[in-house]
Length: 327
Image (cartoon, rainbow, N blue to C red; front, side, top):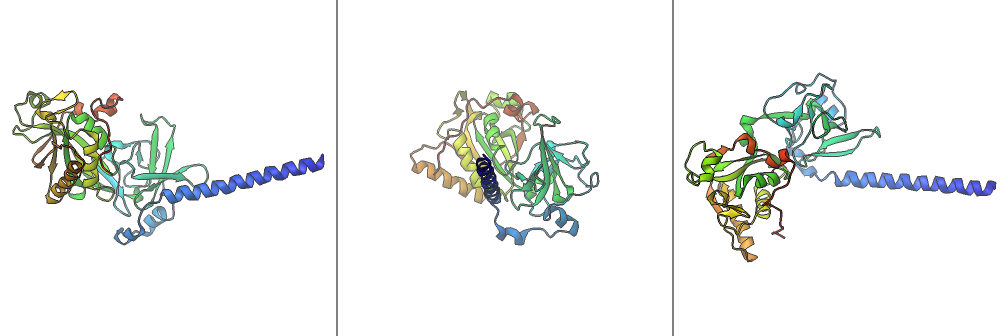
């Protein structure tokens, strides 16, 4: 009986060792896959003060209620202090009363998570440079997302909204009802903001009713502010061509009218060239692309009830869905 118990104990210990080894291997694999950044970019990173290095590099924590962004609620975006990649938007910041800046959402795929070394918490890091940001907590029911990114102020810099177009990239796309176009684009990697609005016409500060009348020349469009460190205009344009049917003229699904035409409003020669390249690829595949390429003019933001429409409604687009069109 003692022999049987001894054998059983050895088997249990062996299983435990194998499980531990598998866990270590899994953790290493996960850490490897969660660190896609290119270290060659390190030469362009910002120099850090000793305090910043203690937090960002050595995974330290600043004292609570001491950070400059704890009670900071100016309109804009928060970027990584080390590499400058966009991390959070001011509209996702809230007062958690915890002593550190708190956010309930991130710029899409800007922040990665991994188990903390303490074995209990979940660490959050900049997906672009792997710099330590803080920790993420769920289940506190503080906001609708039930998520709190608890971030050290020294891990971030702030870009005021007025400087967005100087610091980030801008792209404007139109492909039918702006609700659906906005829904897909605002979830794309590197998109800081996607805003529904009107462009391409004559009337200043048009209303939704005026645009729908067909007498303004404007069409429903989406203005995208994106982080060039995390995405490109071409990547966003590819997504645009895949979330609507670029062969339809003055319509998209059940929505019919000139305000629903497909168009890319290019900001410069590089954007025009990238758009022409993608149109050519689709034409090579046999698609009769109706998408117009036009220079970007004035963009008029749509009314508040047209912003974040599907997220507020909790539903999915009825006339937009992604269809792979590129290899």
